[in-house]
Image (tube, rainbow, N blue to C red):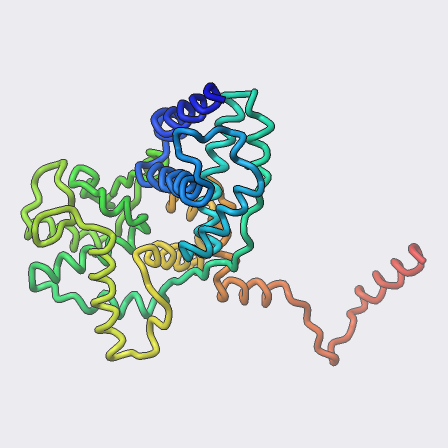
Amino acid sequence: MKRKQEQFAYFVTKFFTDHLPKNRALSENTVKSYRDALILLLQFFQEQLHISPDRISYSDFTSDNMESFLQWLENERRNSASTCNQRLAAIHSFFRYVQYKDPESFEQSSIVLSVPFRKSAPVPMNYMSLDEVKALLEKPDQSTRNGLRDMAILVILYETAARVQEFIDLKLSSIRFGSPTVITLHGKGEKTRLVPVNGEASRILKHYIQVWNITSPDEPVFTNRKGEKLTRAGIQYIIDKYITTVREEHPEYFTKKITCHSFRHSKAMHLLEAGVNLIYIRDFLGHVSVTTTEIYAKTNPKIKEKQLIKHSQDLEPHRRYSAKQKDDLLDWLKNTL
């Protein structure tokens, strides 16, 4: 039993120090998410099953215990089904790693991997219309220092469709001004992509950098009043501030919650509506597979309407068969029936 306990501790350590950051090249935030899932699992074993972390072995990971863990997340910690599934996906990832590294534990790992995900309603994709984006970008006062910074934040968030962490990590060295201006984004799995920025957005960004006196290549581009790198909450505060202002004039705008990620969704939707191929949108967003990008086409009502109109049949009763259609139909009937 002691050997199994030691093995579990060993593989947990290797999973987080080698496999996730090195072999899979996951971002620091993703590794932390996996870590939190395992910490919660260990906490559940200690509080509910009275098994301390140093005594856990593979045999403790039964179907019943794993189902109880998911129930505990839902009932005690008030986690949604999607959050429970995120935790379970991280735990599944660990046990797939164990299967590969320790064949003796293959059967026990399979038990954990057989635990099904919770059924959850699809999360709605909140995005802005073009009119909402235009109204939002009219609000920051570019004649003030902070207003200029806010304008640059909103414009670059939209133009680059950057994930919020990619945006927060932007450094001066990530920007190459020119025709066009190109911004290098460092995304999931340490992957990088080059994103072109249009002329007006480039002008705003360049003016902001000059006014805020950002000169060091390794200096973060967007900071708060203390000169510290902006946080996710800080960016959301800026977004909410201007959305509230817009709503005072246009109550019909922003009926759904708009987050930092909504700017990414909005840009993708607007590219799709403009007729840009999904393959190019996939590369622009940094998706690994176009299947991920297809969700925009499935969600966008304008795209659905276009396709329905394009491929719908004309069923008006006054329409008649042409002479050729009649001949074709008669030939088919004679030869087939």
